[in-house]
Amino acid sequence: MVTGAENWEMWMRRGAGGRPPARLIVAVAAVVACALLAGCQGDGIIDDDSTTAAESGTGSDPDTGSGDSGTEAYTVAAPGRLDQRLYTADVLIRSAETLPEELTDRVRAVPGVQAVLPISLASASIEGRTLDVAAVDPAEFRRFTPDVSARAGFVWKRLAGGEVVLDSDVSRRLVGKGDMMQLGASDKAPSVHVGAYAPLVSQAKGVQTFPAISAAVNVKRGEQLGIPENNALLVSTGDNTPSKLRKQLERAIAKQATLNILAREFNLGAETANLTGMSVTSAVGTFEYTDNGDGTVTPEAGWVKEYIRTESVPILGDVTCNKGMLPQLRGALTEIQRVGLASEIHADEYAGCYYPRYIGRDPSNGLSLHSWGIAVDLNVPGNLRGTVGEMDRGVVAIFKRWGFAWGGDWNYTDPMHFEMARVVR
Image 1 (spheres, one colour):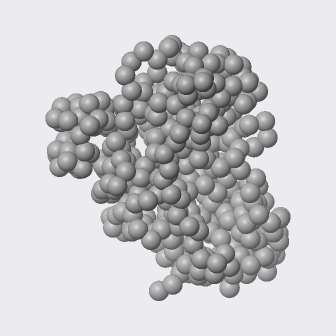
Image 2: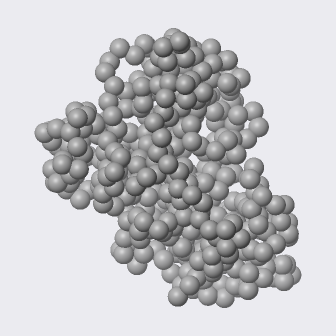
């Protein structure tokens, strides 16, 4: 059966002349690195002491992190000069919950593993994109990033100062005025100053490469965002081919987490999807999923059985959504009907709710919130991306009261789109 969301995908692909071409993997030369990070010397090496605001292209003091109000409460110790060896990030092990120390010790003990770094990791919905945000120790995490980033001292001082560091591939459309980024869809999600852009941790799938970690914050910011503590591991296998260690690593994690190969030409097993913001996560669940290779994903059957429901709601009729979001959707539509605005929502222009896929069917964009079944697209033809749209503002106000974020508020607008941003009962 073709869903409304699938129809919308087909409309968009026809209108755009088909899928966009795949992004090819390219070697980053020193001259490209200099374009991404200021402070390059003549030999293409980043000066580790380069910490002035001008070098980061932002307007706050990198040593104090004064780019947004309240930053001082989220500062951690700034790292010194980089004098330890660097590692490749070859494998990502991830769970919805904190990983036991015994599991981490077992992974470290696997022959061929060179280094293991516990990090905190979750997805955040930001301006219509789902970014994987890591909360990290700046001094340790830098050692798992590319050389050009690891040696850029200002990047890690800004991270320690409470600012967010974005991967160089993250669209600037997601950043608001004053280089501020709201880390989440909820109106209570914190706005954090973007301190730097730098290559972080990437993943290769076939001929494509994209950020496995799109944004990094320090551990105090991670607590503020509600990211589960140390629920992921970055593993370096050095000169050892990661896939050759797969069976040993899988025995070490004992089905308590998912294992994903980041290195080029390898893409193994399932992945884990969980959102920032503990209230929403607890309501809609976390799941493991398999990439189908066509822009769609298949969540684990147990999660689908527990959380995905088909129920009748006012105005739209039968919808298939996450059970954690359905009461709020029903509440919003009931109120819209009660105040006489039902005619402002066109049931025949509804484009679906649960549709597990990447945004735009492109893995580099992250999972769509439709994968969780917590987003709805309404009145599609008159509310296309990048337009003001025709959505009645009374309808918008009601959806917001019922805990939804509206795509019409984004920098690159998507006025058809409403997504669950907080729990309202």
